[in-house]
Length: 392
Image: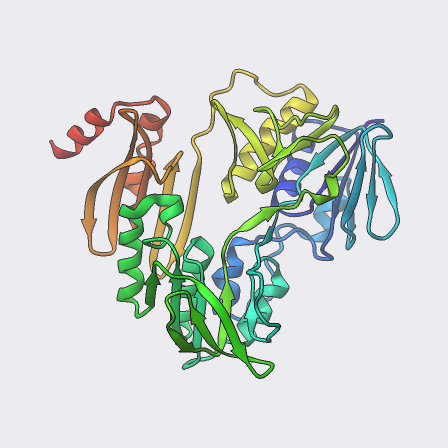
């Protein structure tokens, strides 16, 4: 009987296991992960878990795995892959053979080198990270957030809801500039300033100081600030070191074709760790909905039940900040030409133009205006046509 081993028991790994069963796969399915928890949802970590007394974000109860004959092997990280023997080695010394292997090991947060070892300095990836950060927060405390990407912006909103004073530092000209571009980044910056966040762009963190516990930070512009807690959100890197020497080709993540196949036979990859072929490039898409989209395609390819001619999904992601849901539909690039067609205080809509075509729509508090553009994005509609239709 065929055995599928999925390394990485997060959202992406879980979705593949689910889709294999939905596709009628009757062989063994093993879901192996480094953490001891049942697969859980990460987006709430920067929001609900920080703001409330929530302590878990489990995606499926334990009985789900029994009911679907999915074997869980938790609490030990994969350390090596032998594609000749078709075997995975784990940190606890065990090995597991496979017929098909799916890499879904996700990301690990980047650290800032050279900082002193001080308590109350945090990164955010796991449920333990979120609970430790929450324990350091209280009304009136002063927090420094380094990095104004989605995690940093969401943490700023959550901390403000708790009455924490927030300084948000970002080397780029605006928050989210590297993802959404400076035009929309400026709209996001305005939102945070309105909520009382001290946004400092064009500078980063130089060092921290304190007597065992962080108490001050020095920024690259030379300014010094007193702080009680620091959260560092300067991006993440794919977890691929365990694949060294395996023959699986690595670039910006595990390199795959448009169905998740890697350079090694019977080895696939999905989720944040995987750079799938999209058009002329291989790209990693670090968004929640992408996990489900890729899982259906990959499971269909393994079982032979998928439609190779199915139309490509229009990428979608969102971020909740204060009372505003920021949504992005399509392939957003910071180098696109941006047309802001609505700017109504906390609500906005922007069209992203690439080579004369509508490539994406980003909106804040404007769900209807964003989602109705799915068909036009998929069809490669002329930007002139969509902008003119708005002005009519």
